[in-house]
Length: 525
Image (cartoon, rainbow, N blue to C red; front, side, top):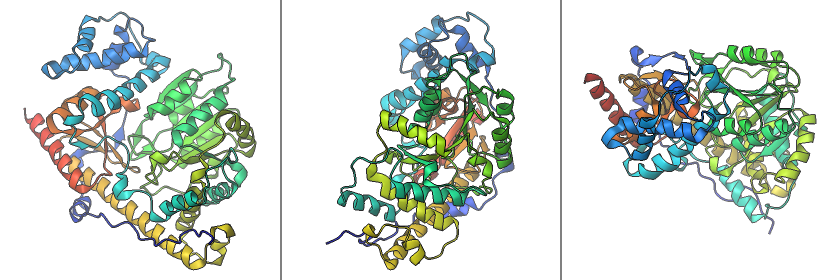
């Protein structure tokens, strides 16, 4: 008997809406607890670590000095006395300027090593028993708001069809065609075809392979690649491994990220620019006007990599045709929007000539993305396109988009799409309510909250600390709540912390209450 896609009954995930969270989200946040401006710079604590390092080009020494200072300041609460001793034995050896830090290869690796230490040795290592509420993961609670049932059915279907063999190194043609149609619907004035698409093993992998592909034969004399910060350390590290790098801090105001520092840093020979279109941890977005200016100012030989993975949970203005320029590469993945970081699936869009050349690189380097996930990517791209274009119900035209071998009929497709739409819209609504409710609750505390325009992350600055990693340690010990230190996203000043709000309200509410009570008590000391 032939196998049929969506042959199993599909029931939407249950709603996890919280009336209490909704009520709080509808309140106006306390104005004094809200910040409309994010500014980062290299502060004295950063400069002091570089000044004390015997070898400032050694990222492990920089990491150990940073942790050693924290351990020394923790006193009886320290876990690593040898690191504290290393800090006490250090002395300032040289003057250091912020520009030296931002242009040092060691800086990128130091932050990445601190990032590794945070997850491996502290949060999920020695301090795991202390972490009662983990608000630092950066991902959605998959058990509550994971993949829609119609997409999970695609995985079962692919397994039953034994679709896990060799494939085109760019990805299966129908999946690439579906992605191209979806991305065409997202952009104003650009028409993509399958020749513009390469499927990948997630966003981080995509940036890593792009860095290798673009920079592998670049002369060492070429100006550095530019990486906007804040940013995700693994992405920046993958670029720094291939070529010199310049970190470019970007400020934001009223939810919009300024592009001016990147424009100032561009040269005609800049080989690559990495820019997150929505910042992590700020949730602020680069405007389309700003993107157009950057893309037009860059040389045609400068590859501009746009990490678009955080463009969700917000009302984005219509994306301009500038994103489809020949020297722009747009990266997406299932990690954020579809809550599936473990699938390691995604894609990027680029000029057909770039994709054609990348084919040879991919086929020689890793063969191709996992063929097992082609069906899920094809179906989500088609249904997401229908959703954003306002389709109420698929008909025979939409049915013809799928191969006859899927065994679909109109009724099965309609039922699958209704389930998908219900889950996607409900999920976005519930996660937005949680983010807004957290903003209101945090604004009642002495913290200053940067209201996010997008994403499941919220950035806040906690008073009383001048080091985000020390802040993480103190807050975790005294409240059982884990926050993500800003230093791990290249926030080089103050106690900027990231909080992930996509957690069940019965976990998020007590965590916020504990954090708020602690901050109030600390401010009263």
